[in-house]
Amino acid sequence: MNVYPFIEAENARGHGTVTRACQLLGISRTAYYNHRTRTATGGSTRQRTDTALTEKIIAAHDRSRGTYGAPRIRAELAAQGHRHSRKRIARLMQQAGRAGRAPRRWRTTTVPDPAATTPPDLISRDFTTNASDINTRWCGDITYIPTGEGWLYLATVLDLASRRVVGWATADHLHTDLPDQALRNALHQRRPQPGVIFHSDRGCQYTSQQYAHTAHQAG
Image: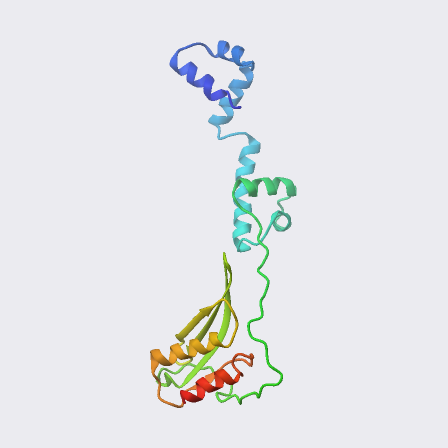
């Protein structure tokens, strides 16, 4: 318990002397006046060092995008010539509300079907941008988003000419219905003329009969 503010308050009210207050609380006058000196000069040397070190820790933590814990931050600071114990760095990180975070595990979203027929690459890996080619070349992919209730999967359709997302869909599964719905949404939004080339990876969702049927229906 910090009794020094009580002594200062009592002294300010004129209810007694510093000597009497120190006697009642069982501390020495020297300790009290040392505390006042440290407060007036911005804290003890240790406190000032901790403040400066915390700033370096926060900077290193930010550079790691919040992934570094105490061991890796300690190693980075040591490489800069600042050698401190791991326990001290861990303590300061905790006081600053910082903690390491393990990178999220990679999740595979599209897996090739070895039995599926691979369609030809009709755009010949040409992903250049040309504003006059809107609604002529689309591409699609599936990604994932971590949420508090599990993984949310997102399928998108991108117009290569404008780099705009023209259709998308979300679901808690990776069934073909997900990218199929994204393509249907793109068709509904853009209503392109027949002849649009759709490009994707060779994931089983995109090489499925269901997806091919939707694409053929739309021309």
